[in-house]
Structure formats: structure tokens, C-alpha cells
Length: 179
Ligand SMILES: [Fe+2]
Ligand SMILES: [Fe+2]
Image (cartoon, rainbow, N blue to C red; front, side):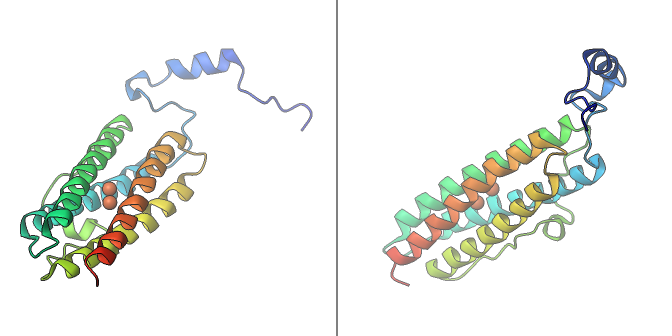
């Protein structure tokens, strides 16, 4: 323990950085299972895309006396989820993977479901369920990555915080419409 250096020495760091330069941000010090991380991120990407679609549907279909306030929230969330999808796709490319935008199998890859919902209350409830699924899966992914890929982990934690706000928004909205 006493002889164990805390940091990799400069010479080794420099040498390692020159190896596999075509891999860009992925250095030999990257200790996560990259293929698996890309797969997890592609599942998260599918989840975000499904959430964009569901919120858009709800935005256009919101009706009733509380329609306007709900529609504004739905639209804001759709925009946020699109931003998450972009961040995740960007990170996949940085890791040397390919973002999967294929509509084929989208719902199978996604953690969250696409439920249209009849009434406004049903829409909000379905959105709340989807947010809670996203929260659990992001928390689990962040824990899995730990110190092996801190950049991806931090990105997911930032997204997680927004999903928690989204869930809160849906709870408040449900209270507002009195259901
Ligand atoms: Fe999201
Ligand atoms: Fe969300």
C-alpha cells in the first residue's frame, strides 16, 4: 500500500494517450465495458424518443378546462426529453458507438411505454408512470457506471434530476386538475 502510487506517472499517461488515438475520448484508462455502455445508452435513447412522442401526442390532445396549463407542461417536457435524447446520442458517438434512431423495435428498446390515454388525467398519470420508470433506470445506470465512466455517469445524473422534476410536475398537475 505504501508503495502504491496514487496517480499514474506522467510518462505512462503520455504513452497511453498515444495508443489508439483514433478512439478519441476513449483512452486505455477507460475501464467500463464500452459495448455494454453503448447498449445501455441506446436503450435510454429509445426511452427518451418514446417520451418525446408521448408528450407531443398529449400536448396536441389535451382538452378540457385545464387543457392549457397541462399542454404547456407537456410541450416543455417534450422539449426536455428531446434534449436528453441529443445528449445521449452525442455521448454514444463519443464512445465510438452508433446511436440507434430506428423506429423498428423502438418500443422494445424503450423502458417507458407509449400510452395515449383518454382523459387529461389519464395522460398525466401515464406520464408520471413513465417518469418514474426513467428515474429508476437512470439511477440504476448511474450506479452501474460508478467510477468506470464518470462522464457518462454525470450526464445521466443530470438527466435524472430533470426526470425527478418532471415527475413532480405531473404530481402537481394531477392535484391541480383535482384527480
Ligand atoms: Fe428525459
Ligand atoms: Fe422526463
